[in-house]
Amino acid sequence: MPGKQWRDAIAVDGVESNWVTRVAVGTRQFAIYDTPSGIHASLAVCNHGGADLCDGYFDGHVIECPLHQGAFDVRDGRPVCPPATRSMRVFETRIKDGMVQILF
Ligand code: FES
Image (tube, rainbow, N blue to C red; front, side, top):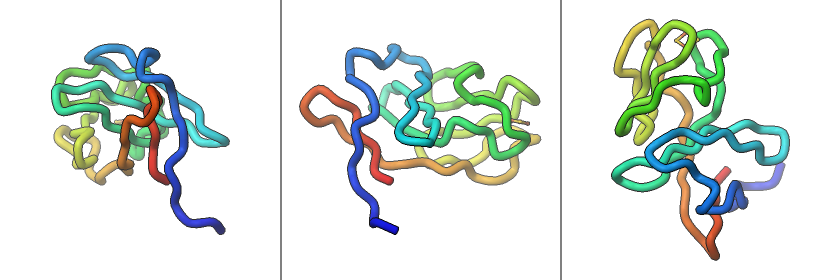
């Protein structure tokens, strides 16, 4: 299995301002968040019950899941509202040549 590498996810211009954008990279679905502290990324699937976080409500640094309204801080993945109790997986991001890249 190859190690982690930076992979292009989406053009910076394609990221919705102050909101969450769904992106497929290879076989994985990511949620890309535009926040006051920059771009953050997580897996798109909620670790509580499998809902698509990209259909949730996003405010500041917090994504609220559309299914049971559990919520996570997208900066570090920690759960901030039940029934979410486990941290979600988050990924490092960077901007390069006009693209958002994710390290995985
Ligand atoms: S599936 Fe996301 S909180 Fe339940």
